[in-house]
Length: 226
Ligand code: NI
Ligand code: MN
Image: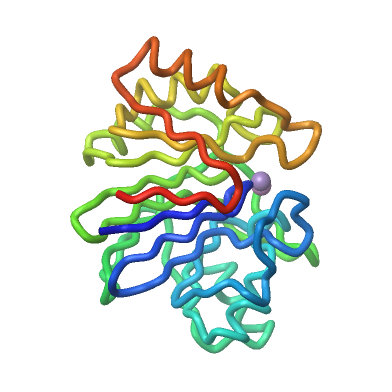
């Protein structure tokens, strides 16, 4: 069984009996974060791209917990230069089997500059295969037709941005659900800032009217079981 907690924005904690996997830990500067960076637990931290609202507190959390950070090669190298020892670089299209499950990096249409202006490579999304479940976390991206290929994996839960402005908005996120056809979808990356204000309940009605996918709406800090 898996427990999945939404810490608002793109930050997700996945807990399996074998590991705690934290994705895009943007907490300290996040007005909606329900936990502090110095109290969150993690065995692995996944970083989708270099922007501050995703890289977030990765360095301090990894230093405190000793968690292994998984990201693209460029960000993994940058993190080593910040003093992190446990990093595992991957890149888009590549998967790796960790003791708790498999991580594959997917494409994402976005940017990835690091906070100091360093080149952060290409941004990515994540496919997680663990405990018999398949989770697709799109992270920051616009709509892309290859989401159909990701859907062919048979996705139990898709985690999709709906905020608009920086990523897909509600209309394209609905089209993403149609391409992926996941069992469930969790909307993220909205209401953190005024510029990405959205009504998730309105989106839920549209998606559940037009598709067979169940929309899960969480409050920051709320948890679901998969
Ligand atoms: Ni971004
Ligand atoms: Mn973002």
